[in-house]
Length: 274
Image 1 (cartoon, helix red, strand yellow):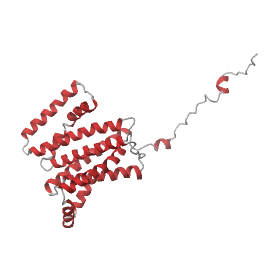
Image 2 (cartoon, one colour; image 1 turned 90 degrees about the vertical axis):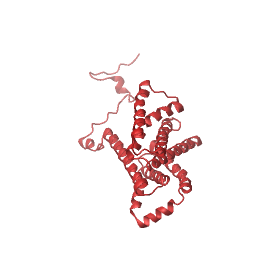
Image 3 (tube, one colour; image 1 turned 120 degrees about the vertical axis):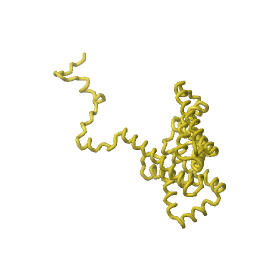
Image 4 (tube, helix red, strand yellow; image 1 turned 90 degrees about the horizontal axis):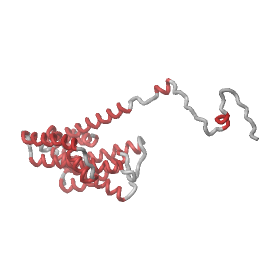
């Protein structure tokens, strides 16, 4: 015979006898806690990051154009290597010193070669882009860069077999036709500059596809900052023998210009920081 349990109004014997079902309800945050929230909302932070990328991209383009076309420092591969060294330094500073996010190591040889291939593609794209600035105005260079989504759709289909909708392909056609018309009427058109600029745009699109694979793979997923930390030093090491072979006197010319005009030092530092 089961012994009857005492009961009172408003009570539940099952909940009172079991501690596993008790819920820990957090306290209501005070006014001080609410005021200690982050200054920027996620939307404002995203907008700030996009704006900083946009203006730094314009800054590095204008600096490279000034150095290559007006200042007479015609060493695009060396400028690309400086840019890669700057990326490596700032990503290392953000991860290891500021500890914005944890460090991720390369987990396999396959992942290493994927990052190495991505570094080579990135080097090709940036070197071609810097080279085109010697022959084309910045506005026309950026107009050709607007065809990046067209090449991205092509490489995504070839590499990952990803098909876009027919509306997307139709929307890309006017962009390509517009560049064809702009090339025909561009007064400062240069064939070699146009070819290397198209190569830079295609390399940028290929980099985006390969980078997307590395950032989304479940087995080899890397944060974008960690990917840059591993990719930038590889790119700098790839470019070092190339700039010494193709632009063999770049070190002597840089030192000579720095002794006569120290302003070039600030320009080169600015290239590495953008």
